[in-house]
Length: 73
Image (tube, rainbow, N blue to C red):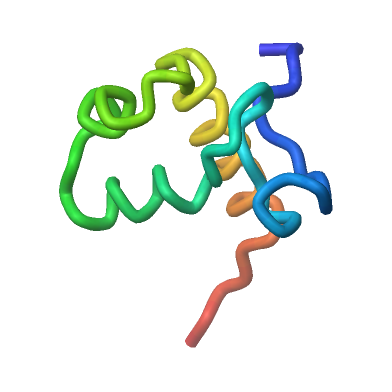
């Protein structure tokens, strides 16, 4: 996805990373997923976030994790 789906703005939700066009922090989605909820459940509770944006944000997080991962022994 070439369109930006997340961003940070000091004027929105105290500068937290949010989904573009919403005031929904990205961390909310991770909280849902950590609790065992599905992306669909998250989207049901935050309908201003599209499934496409949620999946794209997960892809971005995965790419960042791969890029910054370090082997821990």
